Image (cartoon, rainbow, N blue to C red; front, side, top):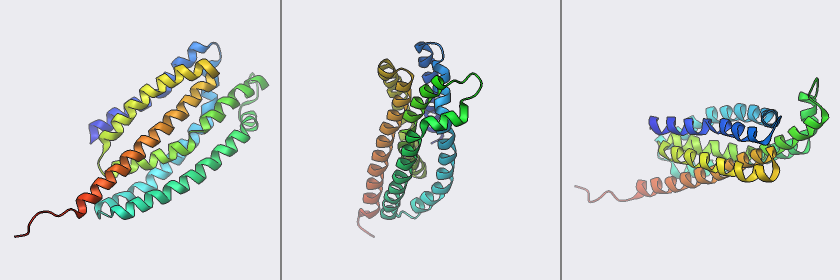
Length: 217
């Protein structure tokens, strides 16, 4: 399980570098806009992802160890609803107040009002990923618990290519904000793939646990 996890992690961690390299083709200041626009969302997701992972993985692992597949499905649905509510609320707040947030955090010195407008658009589109990212974390932790890291590797590879294609398409339409939007779409597709794989695997494990094991001696 270790090798697929390392490969998947290496591929996913290369995405910010790809984003910056593609932003650099959009002209002076584009990389800075992307960097400033991602700071708040990245910090929040980093903290939130750590908290969710730390809290939920032992819980998932105990349920897997006891083969409580029905309970695991119910728990996943419960956490999914909570994550959606919290994530959508965060998106609404950041999108609504994106300009005041950027102005408060960054607008001083050589960071001008025109920079605030540009960075606020990037930040708002980065924020769209929040519920998808949180739900993806749930899927990742459950796949860890059921020793299905190979799925994570293939999803990460798919994310890499989707990110490159999405960047290319959307940056031609919206410029730097298009790269932020592409990132959010990558996390949406990743969430769908992860939760689909989880749900399918849980169904298989539940069927295996109730299947007859042949005639008894």
